[in-house]
Image (tube, rainbow, N blue to C red; front, side, top):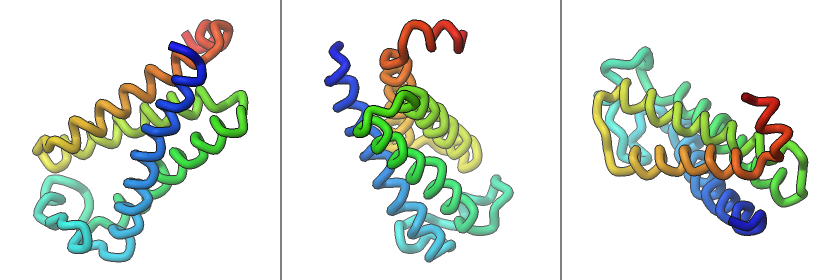
Length: 137
């Protein structure tokens, strides 16, 4: 896979994740009962949260903002871009796993976003230089 193709795929996946997370996070902050995006408070029954305010903040920052930072890093050719892509993949995959555990349900979107998280980890890893890969092992 060429470096350009990896960049394009990473940017595409990061934009899907980032824009969705910004939209979702902002809605959860503004409407902590989840009503604006069709979430039920009953899904939080097995979680430490009474509403979606704190998850909204985490979603907005960890998945929304970091995805946009990673996109910007790729577009300007920053040396740290590959690490940011790997980090975003780890955070997204972790977010999805914790979400499934807390709501005790798996939806199709969990599978889609979990797959995007794994793809981001792989793409970021492939984009790392051999020296950096060795240093991270």
